[in-house]
Length: 181
Image 1 (cartoon, helix red, strand yellow):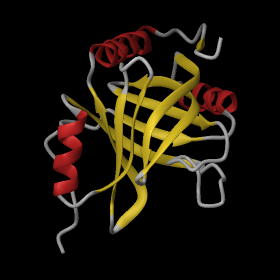
Image 2: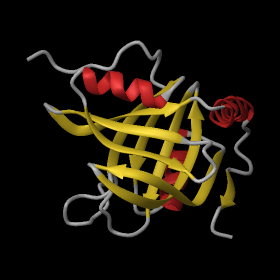
Image 3: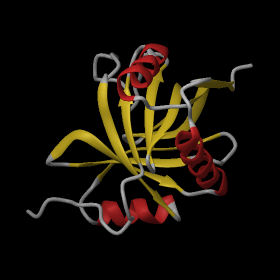
């Protein structure tokens, strides 16, 4: 069987890691790699479908940029089931996924499934600004592939973040937005 492949969505736009200590991970990225500034979104809720069952997950997310690639750090709350936890409910720390921006996440997901990918997680936030799908290649399920719908807020976030990273002088490394308050 020919391995599944996602193609035609342009360059990879995001690389994501899972962590249990978001603040510590951000500090390491700032110190060791010089990446910043970071925007941290606390208490993000994503509702959708995980492996065929309705789910709601809550995460804290840190976003920064290196060139035009978004670095995403995710610290999940709770113990699953979710694409962020293993079967025992532990956070799957380490590299998690790579992502592309797409015009329509639903149609891009269906095309990927038709091409041999298995759906893992489809979700959106309460505002409708963020719509995503995680997929896996059946022969290589260790790393997920994400499709992010390029809604106006997503496109603006990328543009603003890229500009901020280019101009960053190392000061004010973290801005926090908390959806729980």
